[in-house]
Image (cartoon, rainbow, N blue to C red; front, side, top):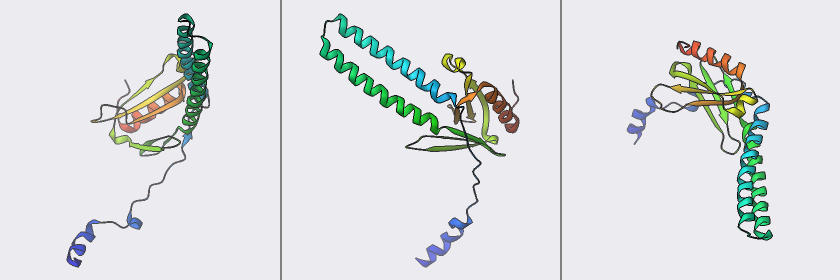
Amino acid sequence: MQEQDAISQPFLLQEQDWSPFDVPELMPVDSRYPGMLLASTAVGFLVVLAAISLFLIFTHAGAMPLLIVNGIGASLCALVLWLCHRWAHSLSYGVSAQEVISQQGFWWQTRTALPYSRIQHVTLSQGPVERRYDLASLKCFSAGSGRAEIEIRGLTMASAERLRGHILAKAGVRDT
C-alpha cells in the first residue's frame, strides 16, 4: 500500500501547490436590462392570460372559472417576474488579460471563463425589444463547439461593439 502511495504521489498536487486564480472585478449588465426583461415577460403573460380569459368569456364558462384562472395567472406572473428580476440582477461579466468571464444565476450560480485563444468567432444579437432599449447580447463560440460558450446579455450596443472588437483582437481573429 505504501509503495502504491509513493508511486501516485508525484502525480497529485496538494491544494497549496495549485496555480492561483485571480478573479477580476465583474461588472453588472446595463441597469435597463432587468426592466426590459420584466416588460417583455409581463407582456407575454398578459397576452396569454387575455387569450385564456377571452376563451372563457366566449364559452360562457361563468365568473368563477374566470376569476380562478385570472388569480392563478396573476400569481404565476408575479412569481415569474420576481424570478426574472432576480436572475437579471445576477448577470455579470469581466474581461481579463487572458479570458472573458461570465457569471449568472442566483440559486445555482455559474461562472464561465473562456480563454481568448479558444475563441473562434463572436456574434452580436439584438431582438426588437432589445433594440428599443438599445441593448444587445454578445455570444462567444469556441472551436469545436456548436453552441455559445459564453453569452453576455444586457450590454449597451456601444459596449457590445467595443467588447466584440477587443475579444476578436485578443483572439487573433479578423473582424469582418
